[in-house]
Length: 534
Image 1 (cartoon, rainbow, N blue to C red):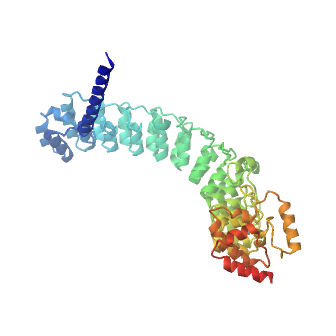
Image 2: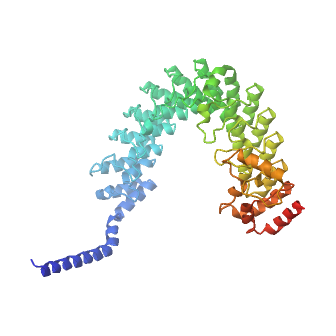
Image 3: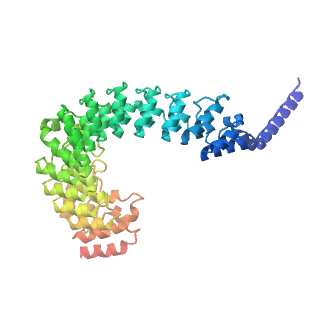
């Protein structure tokens, strides 16, 4: 084959590819249509209407249209599914009779993955459930959420449905999504009769869900005392711990149900066993605000257990914003200045340590004031409480902290080591907060200390003092350096103008002056500086 022939073939192939591409483009809508569901027959529509209306006579007349009983609607519902949810058993019986002449099984699923039996359970149709089971429907097939008919029946607290399914062969220990069993569900809904029925048919009280929680823990978590008692009587372990170490008593403390807590304590539950996150039942009760549970746990929780946990229930109450629990703990002489253990503090990005920090970071005025009145110190955390409240623009909280002696001129050098006290960084855009700080003694003069040179009329003593402070912190960032970045330059004029109201005599370094001269406030600032020098 010569080059000319090869070239001709190549051109033909290219032309063919282009034509095919164009044809595919035009065919696309048609091909999409091919995937759409074929319209239902008129007989199918009449059958579904008769089922929904419960019209037995109409359905009887349509029973000869066997093929229509194999059609499904847009939801994937067959006449069999529709019959399973309506209350007239005669309708379901008739549909089942017709279905025997088709290739359909009783396990056909809707688009949502529901079988006729699942739908009957969800609709609460006990008679239909019995009929489906009698015709061979499986009580084990689950829906798309991996929920069994038995689990769904328990969820509805229907003793009759649960009993019917068990009699129909349902496996009481069938594991559903996240290893959840019908026993877990019964413990959750708190139906003693259903729980007893399940246990009588072989359900295990030791079964654990995907998080390692036993039915006992579930009953405790949801405050179902009677269910909890039944499980204990059937051998439930009150000392059981979930995968994260949460005890059953810890779960009960979360619900705040005092009857559950007392029942567990009567059977030997230990209030001094912490979870793997170092949480004790007393911490949970304080955090959730369950005052009665807290009263019960305070005298039986040892100081040693609290010390080993690395956190005080005062921290928990402050974190949860539970003023009543906080008041009780302080009355019982829990230390208001107890610090978090290092292993707990390190879990927080701000390395918080005090209970006051929790209240302040939550913006909780009530708990903050309660802690301060009880003697809480404001200087126990690496990031001071005053800085947290300034950054959050919480004026009332800032005033409260300042009234109890919070240091307005504190530093937090982890992010940026500045010559001037840190609080200014958080309120450059907030003149109201800045003036509040300045009125409370913020050292405005430190914003004018740097080593970039001064004019000839600078006082020698001032320069000497500034130089000493600057060179004692060689890596500290001066105010003029801090605000020189482009995204802060537009704020400099208004901030400096405000600062000048709180200094007697300052010298503007060349760097800061250069920035200010481009601001609208410069003329006024220049006049003030001139007044200071004369």
